[in-house]
Amino acid sequence: MEYIAFHERNDKESNSPFALRGVTKNIICIVRTIMPAYFSITFELNKGRDAIDSFCKTLIHSGLVFKSGYWGFENDSFDDIITWNQNRLDKNFQLGYTEHHSHDYKQMLFDYFNFSEVRLFVMNNRKERTFSFELIVPDQESLV
Image 1 (tube, rainbow, N blue to C red):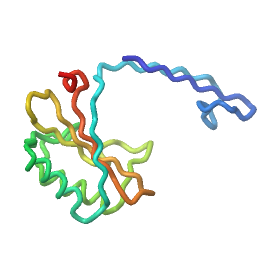
Image 2: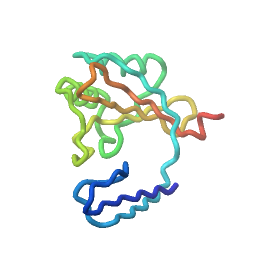
Image 3: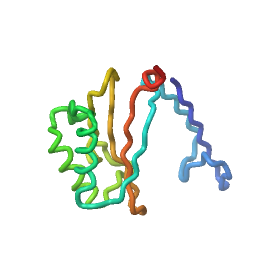
Image 4: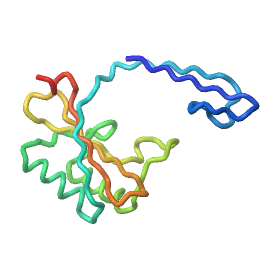
């Protein structure tokens, strides 16, 4: 998979939707990745004191088996991740563009049927009264 982004700015204000303020040179960015496409299911919930705990325990009750944390948090327990994420939500946390992912909500991996990966993560927008969980599996495996 390859993504190409082109940003341009000159002395005049650019009308391009790709213009970046303060950029005085042309920038070409090519990113190559082997990350597969994912099929996702979005669950939108009201923010609340036990929203994360309740939802994640419902997933477990529905048959998903907690495997580990993800992206640097593989050794965190289910309860540790729930507590971390609920504390983030209670503070209405939203990761900034320049912040490291280790400050964000922690992702979880689950075992479920024969999927090679079932991952869950939180998305929050400070301006909204709701937040969402994204449950993703590799796209190729969702078509079987």
